[in-house]
Image 1 (tube, helix red, strand yellow):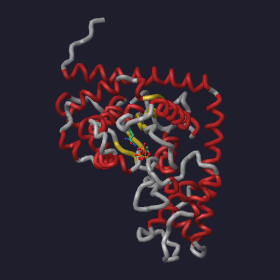
Image 2 (image 1 turned 30 degrees about the vertical axis):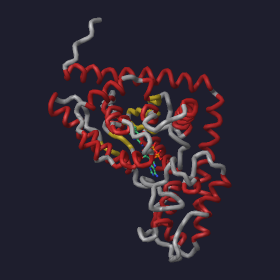
Image 3 (image 1 turned 180 degrees about the vertical axis):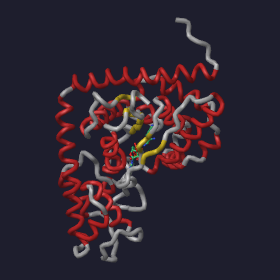
Image 4 (image 1 turned 90 degrees about the vertical axis):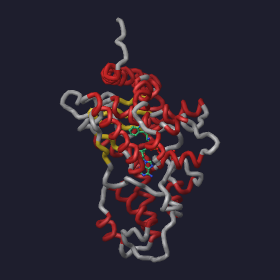
Length: 334
Ligand code: ATP
Ligand code: LTN
């Protein structure tokens, strides 16, 4: 708890252009939860370098992501929006937690297997221990709740196991976090292959809607989305392409699948795809305008970066000091 509020932590990597999946699965929920909790939203740039990055591009993308958090509606006066690399406690706690994590646990992580297969030329130790750094992010702020997409559940389970293990040995040190999975949009699939999640690292740009895509591109991608040849307008797992488009539509318009099926049951897929395109445009257009405005105000963004890093450091140090003492590190002489 911070004051009378529970704590929320989440983060995103600055490794590519954000997709509609990132927005609907994560960012949108962050905004809706931000009043209720004391929130920490990090740009997890330390996680990003588990895959090789061009330094200038990473720096640019990290800033763009931080700006996007604000543009999406997170008030940086109320929410702590900061770069992970500006708070050294993340790395320090990750090291300690590494010593409480078993190789077998990390070997089971499906994201590691996927990423190792994709980047076979650079299977580094950081990629392997990525989930431990993520656990450190969350536990450092004693987070109660962590809003993520379904793909991150396995990492969250590991975080809970590590916290429980540590508490079992040293007493109540860490809050045990809960995942928060949004009801709609938790897993947006690729428009070109609805068996795969929409991902910013997909090689096929037509599978993903990027948050910065212009309206015509968005409309075109929706129109070309893969559906099926059944021609029946239902919300069914047997029609994954249509199911996904209904999910997108619902998440953008705050409507329910039943309601949407009732409205479009007499229409063809083409007509519905057009409506999906318009719904996405009406969500992304204001977001893009706000990003453009914020990008002009360099000193404002700089002040957010500075002030929030200080705030994050303050809370991080509190936990870190406790943990260091528990494991037996000698006290600093001040
Ligand atoms: P990459 O493709 O590089 O692995 P990613 O698109 O999966 O990246 P992350 O930075 O790993 O993006 O995820 C940021 C947040 O967005 C996480 O909370 C994740 O669960 C959520 N997310 C990512 N893709 C989707 C999706 N298709 N549907 C819903 N949520 C998603
Ligand atoms: N692993 C996450 C990003 C991430 C995160 C976190 C999410 C890093 N640290 C802490 C929630 C809480 C991802 O790839 N989406």
